[in-house]
Length: 357
Figure: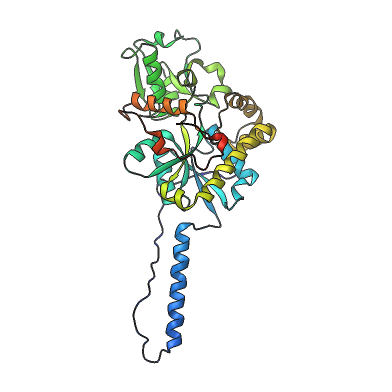
């Protein structure tokens, strides 16, 4: 299966605008030639107007943040493999991996299919800045395996033990900053532990290995592949048991004009999640292929995601949204409550998945 990262920007093609004119036929041009020309121009204008609503492509592309890099994106790989993304009017044969929420959002808005899986924390500020976005489904209401590790032979067994020490997170206003600051606050250690932004999981673990920080964020496959190198200090799910961090997003305009196309996407992903829970051996093979991982290691990692109910069928968790709001306040992204009723549209979800927000 082919995965590739989408560029930060995608050029947008220019359109062609046609109109009828009042120009009279030139000398030697017959009346019927002029009528034929006008009919042709009118036909082009009508077809162009129709295509402005939806332009089916031979090779549609879907944008998914961190596709093929984090386990939360697995349902899309299953949907692609099982052919669900080519049913009910869909024609998606490639999934583009955005490097982050902002990049994925730009790619979505520039592409032919304005839908993407994006972090909730990227959608909220974009909507606040005036983009008319709609969350149409929840993709994960669980923060997954994310944890903070310490050296296995070190003296640190709780956050209280880190007084006067440094703890890492990936980037400002990221999920890792939200979790670590909330954890420090709940432990009564605000001002006693220095939290540092180190630019990513890789740099954070490098700093940890070199002793520059006492604790760093950790996830799979490293957590499962080399457990002897780490001791888990705390897990993100201990701080936020429900965390609706990944959502499916589109524009209000596209939702109004193409509800059938979007509902097909919602249904394709739901079918993929249901397939995953009922066909775990086949899902394991897709997972190992997706991550280019040894199947034996994949078999050690994947079962816990089923236990957590990590992949949503599309439903949104109100406690998960509340946790997002708390986290965004903690890092200074927002200073008041989020009106989720304006941002979330559940009209494309099956009735059994809709909730009161």
